[in-house]
Amino acid sequence: MKEENYIIHNIRLTEKASLLGEKHNQYVFRVDPRANKVEIRKAIERLFGKRVVRVNTCQYAGKKKRERRADFGRRPHWKKAMVTLAQGEKIDLA
Image 1: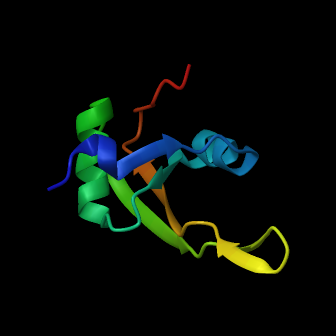
Image 2: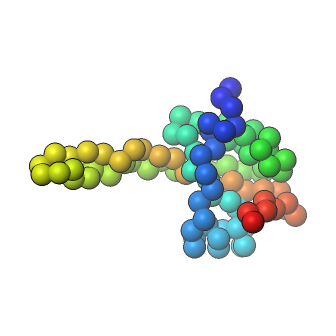
């Protein structure tokens, strides 16, 4: 298994992610596109010491962007994981 630091890239602090945290005790992370749900669950439990109930993932394709004149490049593909923690558990973001 890969190390936790390579699986979890960063936490997504958006308006929608904040609402998920308040209402459903879910936290949104940007993760490695090759990581599966089991690896994500274990990485969160080891990094934060919290019990994970469920992991939902979503793949995003990199957008095509214009570079210089007529050349086109791509932004990287990425994966988002919405992690539901056990009732009463929270991750301190401050």
